[in-house]
Image (tube, rainbow, N blue to C red):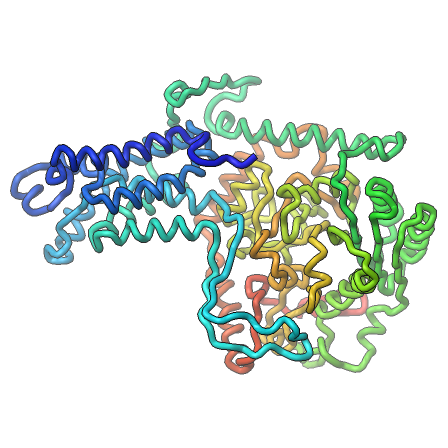
Length: 633
């Protein structure tokens, strides 16, 4: 249920009322001259050092500033809802000494001397506290949708890929639902330029420092629960204080989720009728797409049975299975023939293609698009164009069926992983079913996740560590901590659900690689990342990774991430969070990105008519197909 107004945000409500009431009081009682600071004469001539303590807790002397500050506090109420009253109150109180003392001291001791007295004034009002809170909003509250404003309209809808659109020079702004908040904040910060910039900038930096735990005295203390109308929770089972108490809520969530997952796994292994063993699915029609190469063991042990159970659960008439197998040298073909027979008995529509074309056959063909000159002084077939072509073959039946008027709700991409029906149901239910893509987490050798090539956090960065909590981005990391859908720019990771509409649009969404001319710059990007960059729904509905859905490339990996107890121990959580924090402090993606940006810029100078929207997918690699797999060159 959506929460509107100031419901569940009592502290924000009090701050909002105080901001308005204190500003009105200054005007009514004619006290405005007592709350602002002019270094000369107030501090150095009159010795009114008490103003350093009063300027922020007093209201605004300007009604326009009071209005924008009140609007901003109202926007920031979502932080209190996300954090809870106690953490929110703790943040306000522990940062108050810093936001109160630092701006006037900075003005008195640094800014006024270096500007030769030109910066002499500090207006009153809780701007620093509000901007410290804005830093938390920026870091911990993900945007829910994005939109673009352009000075020119898009090209005619009957343009096709064979008739390229005419490029028109235009100004395009990409915004999100959070943009309004930042616009209000900018108006407040610039209202008495440059005086108001000082408390705004200091407040933001204090907020960032608080998140990074740089501020002395803000780490351990918390507001007593009774002060915010809550009851103090007793620590049980010897959890104690410190990190144990701090991460207790997360441990409980992990244990609760693990119990549910354990029950699901037990039910799946049961011999009772599968229709009674899993969660209730949404009434959806699924187009299942998968490609296989030398996957006989997993097909026979788990994958085939899971697909059969999936068809039974959603109904044979609501499922279409499209599989493309490419030149395996094990008995993957035999395993897939068994799947074909099982689906036939259920009456499930399907297209299972068993290709005899091996990697060696591909390499023996005449070079064409997708082949480039490599550092090994020969022309070689790139891996990603090859994979993109095979993935698109699994989507061909979807196009044929749509022309017959047969449609589906979701396209479900399945890798060669161990999964259960409940895993699929949970994945489809990600973010209440609203997403451009929803992905599982995949594991081959836990605790390391597997698909590093396709996963990018909400800022478009690669992982900061391959173990939980993975991400550099605060928005992605904070969602992971609450086991909520994690906003990301791209993911694949074993199992992916996407709405059908983009795949039957004109032109249809398809897998692709970057151009050969760009790949010559020693760059590559996963087809499973680029598809999110091309998907028009990505900006509108978001791409999410569901941390509750974990799949494995072998039975041992699946069992390791679905234990009977908590998936992550309290000790692991505490240590991993600190490892993540230290990695974020002492590493940066800047130099990796700089290499990629420079190469893209050089390529664009030579190919001014070409664009690459998936720049966040690109890495400094060149990957080619070889007879027994693929290789870096």
